[in-house]
Image (cartoon, rainbow, N blue to C red; front, side):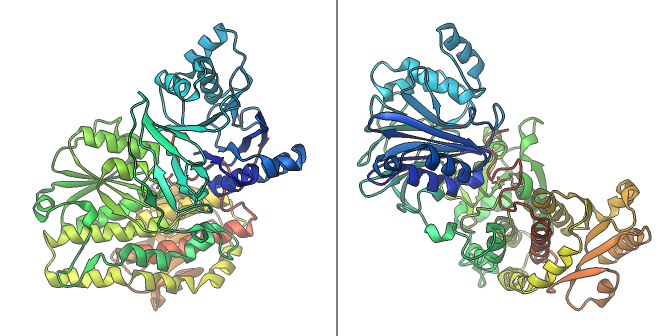
Length: 613
Ligand code: M6R
């Protein structure tokens, strides 16, 4: 949830570090800090708020020469867990001597007992953070060898960490390590960049090394020496990043969210390309690593995820049941390991996650593995913890998603789930011809989305007239029910309008009591089975003064006439229709938030990847 950058090389470290933080700011943005070595002395700047505030602070407080001469340092952008987002709680944190600086992602669970032990030795703490305790512990272990001190300290730590450490006493190296929180090392030409996310590395190199859990690396400008915490050397391959720095820029759009919404035709094409087999009427998802026999023997599909990824799973549930006649259920990843899930070797557990780092989803993966299930993941971020830990699955190929509000990852997740369901369906209920027909439907998704995007201006105008509301309800049936949930999530997280998603039939079991004159109802009323009943529910809302915005199928005048306003999606298969429908809602939410003047890419209190429970 926080971002780490470390740099050692020949360039101006403060600028490199602050620019790197800007690229990671979507991971956490309540305070930031940077530490550099300047003529052998450790100097630190911190500021509450965004990275821009840190930049201002460093440029105001530091002499200009520090920007031109310092060539190594570490930096951090924070999403507060221990203590509020104040300057004193911002990273980097120092040890007792003031010579060792640390930035840390993750949580040190036994920090209270470690802190008490350090205090009994006379250590003084300034912040409320668990990270400062780890900095002191490293300093306490330091008997002249920083690497060994970090190993010794980490052996005493319970919890998760991705860290970068530097010491004024050993100014030629940075030590970095991970357990449960990602660290990527960029292998540059005479420079090495450490980061919690490849986005901070792209401007320097596309050659990266991903650390595994319990790896610790001694990093210099020219070398990367990776060991385990017992000082045994380990080998990690260099990987090439599949995208360049431009992919992580706004590219002329006002916000990353708008850019990512518009990228969906391309992102979906990338997710689908080469994965449909029209000859067999099936899909080719090699990463699943399953034989037709194994697929035929599966008894159940369990989909786990959080937030938007959970909603994609809910669409998948309909797809697996409809297309493959296989029992499917969705479980909130956060609940999975606490409710004794009944899982066995005939169950396929699919972890759905854009980032591949979500703590609850990772824990669910581990639990499912323990129970002997067939576990795979559906991830966007290549090399992420969940992708690596599951070892099999399907990458989304959606490209980097920077906006905290997930858009293109959701639609690519749905597209991949539809392809998975098609594959299972061909082994069970689908004829070759049925399979071909559905494959054609999947193939058309990018074009369907492109047609919705053409309505951007109109959707912006509609959104302007809803932007003053403080409450909204989204309703849908069948596969449009999860789309209603996702529409409500999108609206609330970026516009701060209180929005709830309901099954259309559920409204009259309670929520309808909240309807007053003008309450917005956003109704997924596309022409799919159940539409007539949804139109009936809409009438019930209209009778109570609600204002209805409908998502309707092109040419469906009957549905359009029931609405105060409507956005159209092209006619297509009901499962496929979830994708253009959600894109209409993404644009609606985006424009409502823009008309309200919200900070769309970095909504309050949120962060891109949620690596704490
Ligand atoms: O990276 P993940 O897909 O595992 O993230 C799950 C949720 O944290 C994420 O979808 C969150 O709900 C987004 N802010 C939604 O836009």
